[in-house]
Length: 364
Image (cartoon, rainbow, N blue to C red; front, side, top):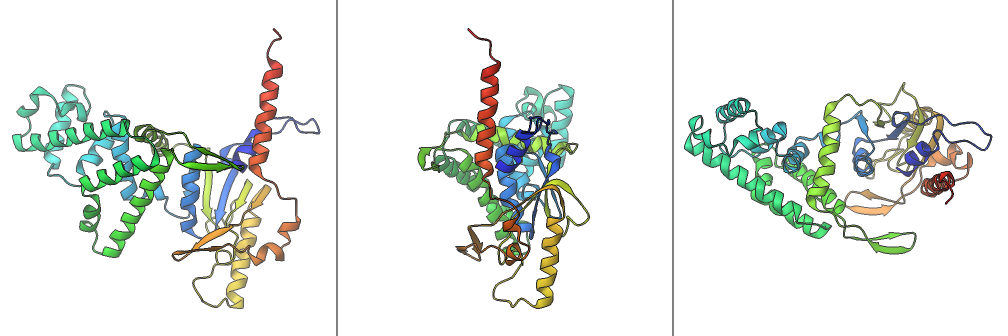
């Protein structure tokens, strides 16, 4: 993320030769990787940084049905007038509120020009909906109001996680996943995605001890509702579908034939590129195929290429030391240019911008 921000920070600036650099847009960047599962960590980092993106060659983590379900609830907490979010939340999990009831609620809302949520509490609701259905709708409304209140007054990662896990338990969401899947293994995988999403939200609520350059500090605490607000904005922009100025996340296979000005080739480690599953042997033919994939990634870049490796990575349930790919040495990529820390470069650009701004101020 720091590399993207630092290169964008150079756009429009004057280089040492006196030439004004061309503006750098998000669509000028691509992050390429060997396997689909690697996209998730980049998606989370991009969303945290507020950088728009699209996933090519695989399904976005945030496009999974279970994540969309939870995002709908968060959007409804932030904006009770979000009718699409209301419809998804009120029917997931099922709570005895049928399509006919919702259709009648929609007709009432249209008649009085209100949102579906506001129509829940209309005095005339009993004229179009049965008393039993009204009871279910009012129970849902009270649940939303209570959750919104608790989300507004809960901050910090630890308390946020307790709130979110309790909410999912009250919803019976894990059982909902098992009821909707024939395979317990698939249901468990979807529940694992949900817990991963909960952890991500909780961490964004802050209050954790972090280390930056040797200095230890507690990150700023945010309420669950504040974080939900940010997620709601990001989801709304993504659903518009007309945003083309975005960073591309792509597998190497899906990137064939495409080019970008700036490319980050990520996770170039033994076991990932070349890809090797478990203790399987790497045949000469397979190794050559992996080498060609590496070459595909390198040749996607028109202006700059960054090759990144992992210090540590997951292998099964274990965390192991990351070993740089043999391809880096073979292609002498480590000799192409000096290593740079984009975070330091970004700090320098910000400092230079601050100096220019201070110099532009009128003298007292």
